[in-house]
Amino acid sequence: MHQTRACLLLISMLLSACALGGGSGPNTQQPALTASTDEAPDNGPVPTTPRTAKPALRQIVTPESTPPAPQTAAATSAPTVTVALPMPTEIAYLRDGEIWLVGASGGKPRRIADGTNGSVAWSPEGRAIAYVRLRAGSAGGALILHPINGKPRVLADAEVTQLAWSPDGKQIAYTRTVDRDADNQLEPYADRSTVHTVEVASHRTKAIGPGFDPAWSPDGGILLSTPGKILGGVPQGNSLRLYPRDGGNRMLVSTGDVPSDLRQYGTPFLSMTRLLRHGALSPDGQTVAFSALGGVGILGTREVRGGQVQVQDIVAESGFGPVVWAPVGTRIAYHVPTPRGTDEVTVLDIATGNRTVFGKPDGAGYREPSWSRNGQALALVQMGANGPRALVVSRGGEGRVRVVARGAVSSPSWSR
Image (cartoon, rainbow, N blue to C red; front, side):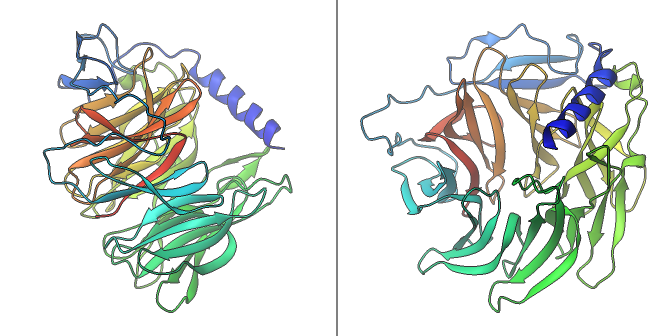
């Protein structure tokens, strides 16, 4: 079933994207400096054209980067480094299914949970970690709360596949996914998913509505992607809905709101959006950012009060991954699985159009961006030829990266 769905989606994307040209990308009315980072000495300007920009409009440079320290016999240790900016204390992450903690400026990682786990997230005050304890052979499992100075306990014993802390740390929103097509896989966007909340203190749960990709608004509302319809085995035609804390719900964006004529962005054809994912609200709650999947992947934003969808970035034959806002300001970081097969992370300032791109065709790739609580640093998973190879930190999300842990890492989350 999933092979058929993947083939249909790939054929659709290839038919729509075959005419993609090298025109200018969104937000290129002003020259924007794009930086590409890798663990290599500073070599100055790189003669490479960014994903959607004309060479005259955007330049790639290689900023400072710090070569990793030699690997020692202790596979769980990482180099101790010094970072000038004040930084949060620790980053939680997965490595081979186990949960580890490491100092944001380096040090020796320590394991806090074994087994097979997923979706790690620190509480806002940095006193507990929530994660999914995966069931054998499943992508879902039980929602676990692990106080740093206490014993883990189960908050929801269901097929949990996604989680997100409320801003006040009193609740966790989670996605419960049922295997709709009985293929022994749980995919929140393709199977039958519903979003719920659970109170950390009382364990009281509440059903929010059908959907996936839960995210919180600053005032305690919940944003989610609705299921849409399954046509030919492919999910499509959904929307982003906001469920305010005081009840009710309203649609913020639908697939029909996303522009289909992308000629002004250098894409000379029509592209129909089929699915909206990864909705995220800005720190002031006024703007929603999201990924639109179709013949061309679109990174879009829209004011919560309404108005036109603004196309911030496009990518052919692919779609953008999770979108995360910096806790302060107008910057977002998002994952870009490019058509050439490499992973990039872009940090984009919505207000100015300036962007920094982590990743190069001939160097390391990056994915899973995670902002520190104060917005002064960005954690990234660094990719090698055989998959994830290190957890790195960039000060300010603007260039220099430091390795803080090595191995098959994923799901980084900052303490405070």
